[in-house]
Amino acid sequence: SQTKVEKHKDITIEISATGALAFDNVLVAKDELESRIKKLPADTSFLVRADRATPFQNFVDVADLLKRFNFSKVAIQTQSVSR
Image (tube, rainbow, N blue to C red; front, side, top):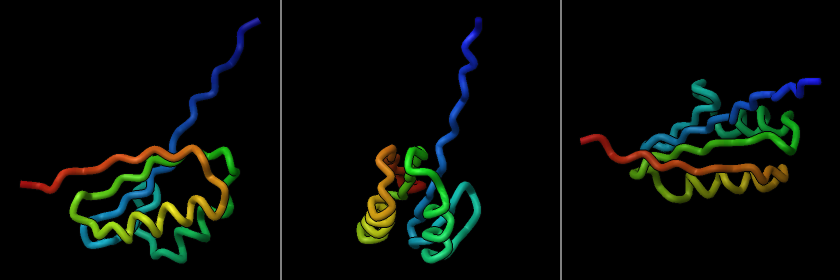
């Protein structure tokens, strides 16, 4: 019998240079981001994209939020500043 392979999509969290947050391409406030991620199963995969120019604390706040809800499948991608 064939094994069905389930294609799993990462949830994307983007942090702009100004600190704005987007959850899967939808702008959200920090408290709304928390509300959305706490409903997800602990094995959810995340891709966190942060602009190089964003203050480091904005990244730390998102990382702490993911850690608080025990998410361990987290990849990080930085975006260079537009020239």
